[in-house]
Length: 113
Length: 113
Length: 113
Length: 113
Image: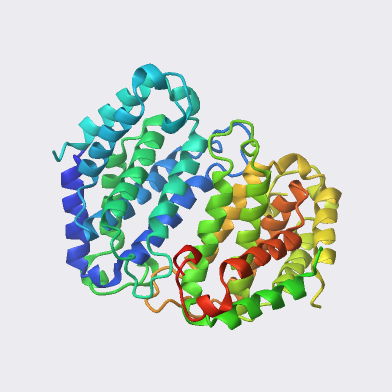
């Protein structure tokens, strides 16, 4: 329960290796799969008027977000990208681009602050 | 360096809280942002013929995958979903649906194995 | 002005033929381009709260919708699909699936009417 | 058969008006529907290695492309955009940006020709 990210990543790598699936997993098709799963998340919001998801979709939401993470990890592994480190580094830049005193309560882009 | 997932998630929550941004982050717009970033990943493969990304896009790839993770975490947090646990649970099902002896070397869907 | 669809399609075919571009236009990349342009349309609605597009985007909207049509026509031509006839045929089915007396004022799916 | 675009558009407008559906068709949800249908086209290419669609999907291809056109027309009508005229105008620019003598046989972007 609440298994950590590295252990999960290791499990996914082993899952694919055990099944000899790397032959199918070229990066272009991984990127398409990522895009398709992101669309399935979006579909949970189709036709709502209040900026919320459709009602009664809690379990599906969990499943679809997990699917996006799956392909995101697969694609990162293909390129030997440390996903968590990559976003952590990006947060360094975000914190610089959006200083608290300027960005607080504003939805402006950093170059318009 | 190689900061863990929980610490990264905490950093993102603090980043948004410090800037009072939750007012902008309704889930439908988060889902749209997730979809748009997944498309930016896909764009790195536009017009290639060999199922690989365009050349010289290593840094962009890292950045775009990080962006997808950012919105994925934001959306998960909105619904108080433990993303890592959700995918870990899904892997339980995947391992059942795709037993090694049947799935090895096959690209068939589980219901066609 | 208000040129008809067949003339437009002919113009697009000639445009590509004159430039010897069919070698680049495999259908998978056309489908990716279609998806990417649809995402650019969606981007015009990112972060709005009222289900409308961002303000001042009238010209961009026109341009992005035209781009979607361009790739839609390219992909249809690749498969020798008569796009207008295909949708017209689909409307036959839609009219059957959603009889006026049942569907009027309802957002239910046809199988829930 | 091979009904023209204007007649098709008129049919779609009448189809929605007869069912009093405009109340559901805010433009943001139309744009989401457009994006989702473009993803369904892309799905027909998931996991192929040769840049072609999966085999035996001819009828689905026709249906999915028709669905994209449906939402494209719906969104254009919402903004009173003449879709055919918009793309025709865009072709004027394309022909200027890609002069035949420079663009022939080249996949370079216009600013790199």
